[in-house]
Structures are given as C-alpha cells and as structure tokens.
Image 1 (cartoon, rainbow, N blue to C red):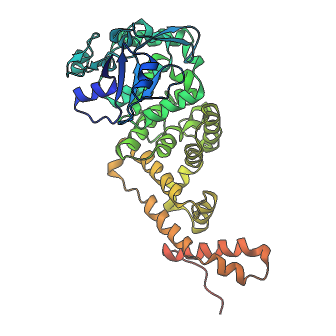
Image 2 (image 1 turned 90 degrees about the horizontal axis):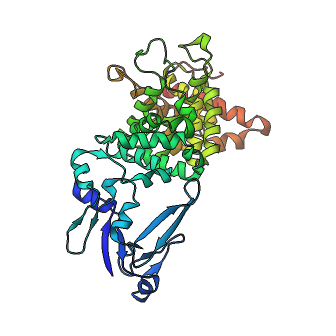
Image 3 (image 1 turned 60 degrees about the vertical axis):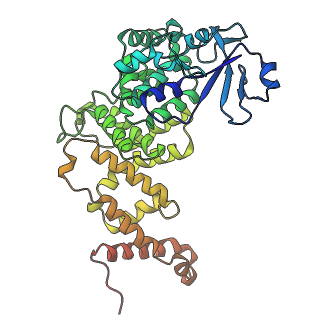
Length: 411
C-alpha cells in the first residue's frame, strides 16, 4: 500500500501558493485495509476515508467509466490493481494530475509541471469530454490563474461538448456551486469570458450572455457594451475583496438592459423592473441561496436610486431605506452600497469623478436610526397614523442631517 499527495496541493506547492486542502490517493489497498488502520469512511459513490489523526482525505485509486449523460453518469472502479497513473488519467487538467510520493519525488505522467511553467490550462485526455462540470471547473481555474491561457485543443473540446448538449444535463446545484466559486476568484470576468468563448454561457446563464453587444448609455464609451461593463463590475468586486452576495449582485445588476426596446437605445428606461424579473428567473433556475438572491434583487431595483442619491429628496431617501429594510438590515444595506460602488467604478474614467452617494446615504440612514420610533408610536393617539408620523419624523431628521430646508415648527 502506497500513498501519494495529489491534485491541487501539488499544483499550488509548485506555484508557491497556499493551499489548505490536502488530498491523497492510496494505491494497492482495499476498504477493509483502510478500516483496519483506523481510517473513517466518508465516500458515498467511491471509497474515500479520513485519516484518524490529520482528518485529511485519502481516496483509493480508481478509474471511471461513462455510463450516461451529465455529471452523475459514471461508474467507478476502485481496486488494488488500479495504478497511480490510472487514477491521474481520469483527472481534468494536466496541472491537477500530478502526485508527490512519500519520498518527495514528483509523479507527472501528463507533463503538468511543464504546463505550469508555460501557464497553460490543458486537458489530460479525451475523458475530459465525458464530464460537463469540467467546463465550469476550467472556467473557474481561468479566473484563479488569470495569466494562464487555454490550450487550443482544450477549447475545441469544450466547444464540442457544448454542441453535443452535455452542459444541458448539468444540475442547478452544481452550476451554482461552480459559479459561486468562480465569482470568488481573483478575476471572475475570465470565468464568464471562457464560458462565452466555448458557447456554454448562453446555455447556462442566457440572461448574462444577452448583455454582450447591448450598448451602454449614449455618454458612455462605445467600445464598452453592457456585457463588458458587467465584467468590469464583477472584477471590481473581486479587487475590493467583497463577499459573494456583492459579487453575484454585481453580475446580475443590469440584466434588464438586454431587453431594452431597440427604439429607445442607447437609453435604458425602465430596465430596473426588467432586471428584477430576469434576476428572479435566474435565481429560481439555479436555486441561488437567499442572501445572494435578496441582495441581487435589491441591487437590480435600487442601484439607480443609490447613484442618484445627491438628487433625491429627504422623503425619497427615507422611502428607500424603508423599502430596502435598511434599518433592520444595515449590514445588507452596506452590501448594496458596496455593489453600487463596484458598478460605479466598473467603467472607464471613473477615477476623475467624485462618488459621494455612499457617504450621503449612510449619513441619512444614521439620522433615520436616531429617530425614537417607539416614543412616537406611544404618544400617538391614532394608532393607524403611527407609520405616517414616524415617516415624517424620519424625513425631518434627514433634512436636518443633510442641511436641507425643512418645515418650520408650529408656534
């Protein structure tokens, strides 16, 4: 029985990058032998065990055979006669198909180290085409290793997989899982670019794919369409280290512009309502978690109001806070402001303009939070008029905080 460190841990060690996940392959063993040494089984589809002390994963060397469409259409074979090279051959990319032996020697039958040096993402073999998830994984790796290129033969293979309908069999949960991971990489725009280049974007995220070729406003740079702008926005969210809900909201904030009537282009009147509808559609299809969905919907509906904060009356600002539930959910409102900042900076020439909306809105929100709503409610004889009284008090507080003219108190 021999054990090897495999996959991402070996790749990142060679790149000098940190990697907390350490996976191992065991050659020449049986499940019974693993249990006898104190390993704890965790695998459902194939034998995977946790080390009794380190709790790192140890999987028996295995091969796989395509038995049907999609991600689940595989049969696995794990036995003592499966070699390390057999196991590595089933992996997706050459840079992920290396192993480190116990004596420190590198096992690299598919020249992954050479591809690391050349900064190339290349598939190991024709079995890549059997698993459509590998398209998503490669796109995610392209977002992580943003200076790597994709081997032409690998891109051709991906395009063939899309043409054969393989990606149409991906389950929603796995699409979301890989999309979420890709959005959290250092340059998420590359994930979208790769998916679009191989034809998978229109099948998986048609609402996003339709943004490319749609012009932005008339005063915007003509070389940057709505799709390119969206890529710039999600890259801003990564550059600033924002959380996943902010990055997803950045991706979906302008979906409605894809359905702007041609006769009003390059204006996009009414795109907020269209964006909300399309975001709801995308989130339902991919079963997006509530925190990401809710922020994306707020961003789609209200990012224009946030950008125009300097021109909004105090009463409109208070209504914005109430509709976004900013008083009860200030952390989520801050995420809305973060996503709007990405939208504002995800364009050419933003450095030459001031963006004071977040500061103005936070000052106004602080004023609203200072209003003693409970005291106002207790002093109000007409209980039906409580919401109106509280709203009016909040408006006066915002006017005072922003030095706007307000009503004179009665003498």
